[in-house]
Length: 242
Image 1 (tube, rainbow, N blue to C red):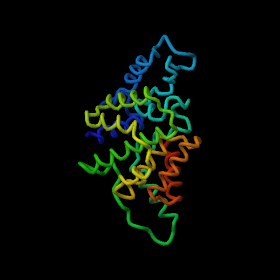
Image 2 (cartoon, one colour; image 1 turned 135 degrees about the horizontal axis):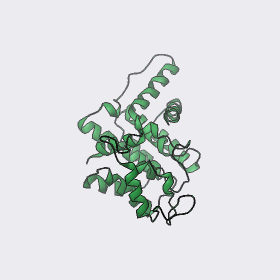
Image 3 (cartoon, rainbow, N blue to C red; image 1 turned 135 degrees about the vertical axis):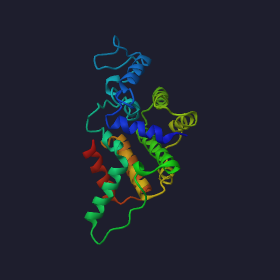
């Protein structure tokens, strides 16, 4: 699989670099194509920018696959408080910073860092971590139960457009149907740094004002065995990065 390539592309989108610049992803072009698929071309759709399928295309512009992952039917707009894309753009560094801040505030001596940020990994280790983070984002996107079959297909298509190989395509399709299981996701983490990154990307995708999504985040934090002060610091980092 080429999960690390796809995660890199999503991180570029999150950082606002995926708009057709050198080496970037043409997000605008991708979303115009998506709009046409939904019947929401320039001459159709309601005054709020929704296509005939009910998907709010305007809320996706500039977000690409990320826009779909946060749920197009939730009425969120890019740049809104619920969207914390910046946390995805620098997930490893921010998770590391959250740990340092936690250690600085904990008192009584510091503990050794366990694991490296995803940005510093290479080879198989980076591929494995990337897959964990993609799985976390997909599960978080599904936490409110509002992604229907059409949206699952569109998310898969958008990830394909980022360059997913056949094996990753099949894996994403499977993840769209698999039961949500915080314990199983937590078992994928091979270090405390990985656990913090999994939680952080989940924070970036969910709307913590939605009870179902908040419940998923709390369940995930417990499954990852993250102290409450660590999860609180990760959530603070996500808000500041957003």
